[in-house]
Amino acid sequence: MSIAMLPPPPFPNDIGKPYAATIAWHGLTILVENERYSTRRQLGAPPGERWESEMPDHYGEVHGTIGADGDPIDVFVGRDESADTVYVVAIAKPDGTFDEVKCMLGYPSKDAALDALSKAYDDSLRILRVSAWTVADFVRRASKGVVRGDWRH
Image (cartoon, rainbow, N blue to C red; front, side):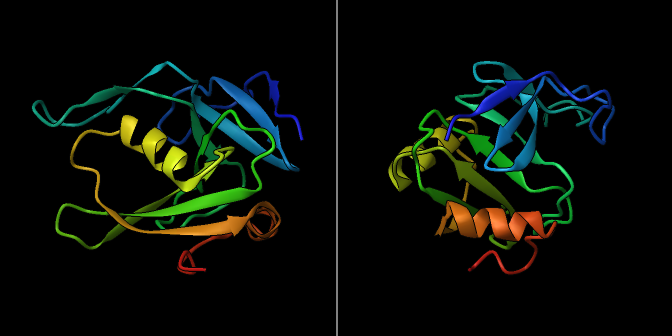
Protein backbone atom coordinates (compact mmCIF):
# COMPACT_ATOMS: atom_id res chain seq x y z
CA MET A 1 0.00 0.00 0.00
CA SER A 2 1.62 3.24 -1.04
CA ILE A 3 0.92 6.54 0.63
CA ALA A 4 -0.14 9.09 -1.97
CA MET A 5 0.77 12.68 -1.12
CA LEU A 6 -1.67 15.06 -2.78
CA PRO A 7 -2.05 18.85 -2.79
CA PRO A 8 -3.73 20.45 0.24
CA PRO A 9 -7.51 20.86 0.26
CA PRO A 10 -8.91 24.28 -0.70
CA PHE A 11 -10.18 24.98 2.82
CA PRO A 12 -8.38 25.75 6.13
CA ASN A 13 -8.55 23.80 9.38
CA ASP A 14 -10.87 24.80 12.22
CA ILE A 15 -8.52 27.56 13.46
CA GLY A 16 -8.09 29.06 9.99
CA LYS A 17 -4.65 27.61 9.27
CA PRO A 18 -4.21 26.14 5.78
CA TYR A 19 -3.43 22.46 5.50
CA ALA A 20 -0.01 21.53 4.10
CA ALA A 21 -1.07 18.48 2.07
CA THR A 22 -3.50 15.60 1.77
CA ILE A 23 -2.64 11.92 2.11
CA ALA A 24 -4.71 9.10 0.65
CA TRP A 25 -4.23 6.20 3.09
CA HIS A 26 -6.15 2.91 2.77
CA GLY A 27 -9.20 4.76 1.44
CA LEU A 28 -9.15 7.46 4.14
CA THR A 29 -8.36 11.11 3.50
CA ILE A 30 -5.81 12.55 5.89
CA LEU A 31 -5.52 16.31 6.00
CA VAL A 32 -1.92 17.14 6.91
CA GLU A 33 -1.53 20.07 9.30
CA ASN A 34 2.22 19.69 9.69
CA GLU A 35 4.52 17.89 7.30
CA ARG A 36 7.47 15.81 8.45
CA TYR A 37 10.27 18.05 9.81
CA SER A 38 8.06 21.14 9.97
CA THR A 39 7.68 23.10 13.19
CA ARG A 40 4.34 22.85 14.97
CA ARG A 41 3.47 25.83 17.15
CA GLN A 42 0.80 26.44 19.76
CA LEU A 43 -1.36 29.29 18.52
CA GLY A 44 -3.41 31.55 20.74
CA ALA A 45 -1.90 30.40 24.03
CA PRO A 46 -0.97 33.03 26.64
CA PRO A 47 2.72 33.98 26.88
CA GLY A 48 4.60 31.38 28.90
CA GLU A 49 2.27 28.61 27.71
CA ARG A 50 3.29 28.67 24.06
CA TRP A 51 5.28 25.78 22.68
CA GLU A 52 6.74 24.49 19.45
CA SER A 53 8.23 21.22 18.29
CA GLU A 54 9.71 19.75 15.15
CA MET A 55 7.42 17.07 13.80
CA PRO A 56 9.14 13.69 13.27
CA ASP A 57 6.46 12.62 10.77
CA HIS A 58 3.39 13.97 9.03
CA TYR A 59 0.69 15.05 11.50
CA GLY A 60 -2.95 15.77 10.78
CA GLU A 61 -6.48 14.48 11.00
CA VAL A 62 -8.75 11.99 9.29
CA HIS A 63 -11.20 14.07 7.26
CA GLY A 64 -14.87 13.73 8.19
CA THR A 65 -14.33 11.98 11.53
CA ILE A 66 -14.81 12.72 15.21
CA GLY A 67 -12.28 11.46 17.74
CA ALA A 68 -12.65 10.71 21.42
CA ASP A 69 -12.12 14.39 22.28
CA GLY A 70 -14.85 15.64 19.92
CA ASP A 71 -12.36 16.88 17.28
CA PRO A 72 -11.35 14.99 14.12
CA ILE A 73 -9.22 11.88 14.69
CA ASP A 74 -5.58 12.98 15.13
CA VAL A 75 -2.97 10.93 13.29
CA PHE A 76 0.76 10.73 12.78
CA VAL A 77 1.81 9.08 9.52
CA GLY A 78 5.11 7.23 9.66
CA ARG A 79 7.26 5.92 6.84
CA ASP A 80 6.51 2.19 6.93
CA GLU A 81 3.96 1.73 4.18
CA SER A 82 3.70 -2.00 4.90
CA ALA A 83 2.89 -1.58 8.62
CA ASP A 84 -0.27 -3.55 9.40
CA THR A 85 -0.97 -2.17 12.89
CA VAL A 86 -2.34 1.19 14.03
CA TYR A 87 -1.30 2.20 17.53
CA VAL A 88 -4.10 4.11 19.26
CA VAL A 89 -2.56 6.13 22.09
CA ALA A 90 -4.73 7.61 24.85
CA ILE A 91 -3.11 10.70 26.34
CA ALA A 92 -3.81 12.22 29.76
CA LYS A 93 -4.16 15.81 30.89
CA PRO A 94 -1.69 17.01 33.55
CA ASP A 95 -4.16 15.91 36.25
CA GLY A 96 -4.13 12.33 34.92
CA THR A 97 -7.62 12.32 33.39
CA PHE A 98 -8.24 11.39 29.75
CA ASP A 99 -7.50 14.18 27.25
CA GLU A 100 -7.29 12.85 23.69
CA VAL A 101 -6.20 10.06 21.36
CA LYS A 102 -3.37 10.11 18.82
CA CYS A 103 -3.41 7.37 16.19
CA MET A 104 -0.05 6.23 14.88
CA LEU A 105 -0.19 4.97 11.26
CA GLY A 106 2.74 3.55 9.35
CA TYR A 107 5.02 2.48 12.21
CA PRO A 108 6.73 -0.93 12.29
CA SER A 109 6.31 -1.38 16.06
CA LYS A 110 4.76 0.06 19.19
CA ASP A 111 8.17 1.32 20.28
CA ALA A 112 8.69 3.14 16.97
CA ALA A 113 5.23 4.74 17.22
CA LEU A 114 5.80 5.88 20.81
CA ASP A 115 9.27 7.19 19.95
CA ALA A 116 7.81 9.36 17.17
CA LEU A 117 5.02 10.56 19.44
CA SER A 118 7.44 11.51 22.22
CA LYS A 119 9.60 13.49 19.77
CA ALA A 120 6.57 15.64 18.91
CA TYR A 121 5.91 16.58 22.55
CA ASP A 122 7.84 17.86 25.51
CA ASP A 123 8.38 15.98 28.75
CA SER A 124 4.77 16.59 29.82
CA LEU A 125 3.40 13.80 27.57
CA ARG A 126 1.44 11.36 29.74
CA ILE A 127 0.34 8.13 28.09
CA LEU A 128 -2.63 6.34 29.63
CA ARG A 129 -2.86 3.37 27.31
CA VAL A 130 -1.74 2.07 23.93
CA SER A 131 -4.02 -0.21 21.93
CA ALA A 132 -2.97 -2.07 18.79
CA TRP A 133 -5.61 -2.21 16.06
CA THR A 134 -5.38 -3.79 12.64
CA VAL A 135 -5.34 -1.35 9.76
CA ALA A 136 -8.62 -2.86 8.54
CA ASP A 137 -10.29 -2.32 11.92
CA PHE A 138 -9.06 1.27 12.15
CA VAL A 139 -10.22 2.04 8.60
CA ARG A 140 -13.61 0.43 9.26
CA ARG A 141 -14.17 2.49 12.40
CA ALA A 142 -12.82 5.73 10.94
CA SER A 143 -14.89 5.25 7.77
CA LYS A 144 -17.99 5.31 9.97
CA GLY A 145 -16.84 8.77 10.98
CA VAL A 146 -16.53 8.28 14.72
CA VAL A 147 -13.89 6.77 16.97
CA ARG A 148 -15.14 8.33 20.18
CA GLY A 149 -15.28 6.73 23.61
CA ASP A 150 -14.37 3.25 22.41
CA TRP A 151 -10.64 4.00 22.13
CA ARG A 152 -9.97 1.08 24.47
CA HIS A 153 -10.96 -1.28 21.57
